[in-house]
Length: 413
Image 1 (cartoon, rainbow, N blue to C red):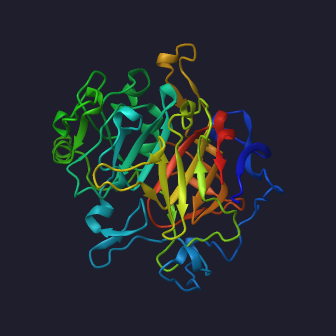
Image 2 (tube, rainbow, N blue to C red; image 1 turned 45 degrees about the horizontal axis):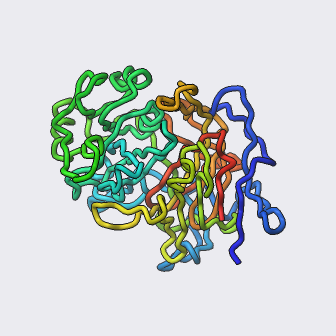
């Protein structure tokens, strides 16, 4: 019988200076509710993960399924170099054409409520952010670098401040159709982030050539607007944005190098991940039991497949189910701007600071860690109990911003 693990608020304590100042919140740990509590190792084994700067040759053998068999050392990718016209991507660690790996990614705001589905092109995103918005459903921000075969991405929806804050860590060109003006207008029109935005109130230098509508019979008008890639390229040229990564960009995450695999063999097995649990809650991912977002790990390919609204989450572009190599839960302090007005209860999340609660899922395992982010242009640094940076496996990553008030709803199996 499959064991059930419930993420409960009980044992370890994080000081969430990065998630809301002086408050201290209990950090969730996995408990086995059918047997004895499952103990989380407090330290990273020396033979499992080493610093990228040590440059030691991993000792192990990569088979056609390394996520099942690799037992050697794990080192992260070091300096990016060009080999035969290819370079390892900053967003996935995978080898891509040099032009793709060096050009700045596009951060596109994409709705995820039922009236908007299916989305087009989402499976091509290298990184996807998912966060709650007003109404308690979630909205996505896809970071696209490998988009040449797409004609469009979308539908595209409006901006919220915390998505802009997250996009700045990746030196993204930010794309949105609409915005919550009170909290976004100043930052999006500043020189802190380059944006290709639909021309609407609150946008001072719009890019209407980058957007168009697609005929979608039965859909509301707000779910018919798309980012058109040809028009996007024209807008970037007209606006004078740098097309390759600027000197503000540092890196995204640490990824395992080609000749090794981050197995985390001593970590607990977690093969089914529910960021909002299976029940009803107001945290966003549960959305009163409607969307029930979850991921299922497939040991045959080492990927996590996404489900929502009672079935697989598929991409209209290719008909395929969304699947990623890594999942990150970034626990953040959040709140409502207008808590007494349910129709306009815009949310905020603190995505900067130190020692925020964090959970990384890769290779069918869960790594408990913390996240640190110094400022707008700093990366999200994921640290284990020893202060070593967590190494992800090469591939796509899905990041869930978890409202700390609702982290106890997370369920893992």
